[in-house]
Image 1 (cartoon, rainbow, N blue to C red):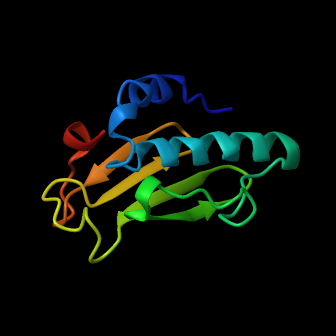
Image 2 (cartoon, one colour; image 1 turned 180 degrees about the vertical axis):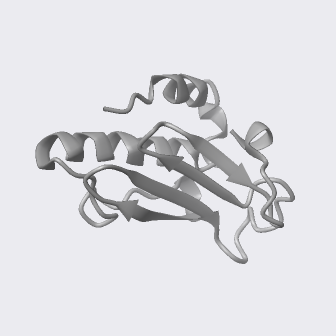
Length: 115
């Protein structure tokens, strides 16, 4: 079973920024996915795991893949929202393997800047 310990520790250090970044919401979603997996032997859809949201509603969260072996969730900037002009962090991703990534508006990797 995947372990998200390292990722969780990194984000807890960023908690004061949680309203500006969707990382805390994505990690809550990852935790909910692991609980769902233990009970159902598969990962759940967005609706099945409780539909987590980001603080301030500046990002839209989606579960893009959920099955018996993996899940992938993304958080994307809401058009017209306060974070819409962020030059570095447009989309965030977390998956069942504990990987996390971020991309800028052009699609280039910005993980080191955003996470």
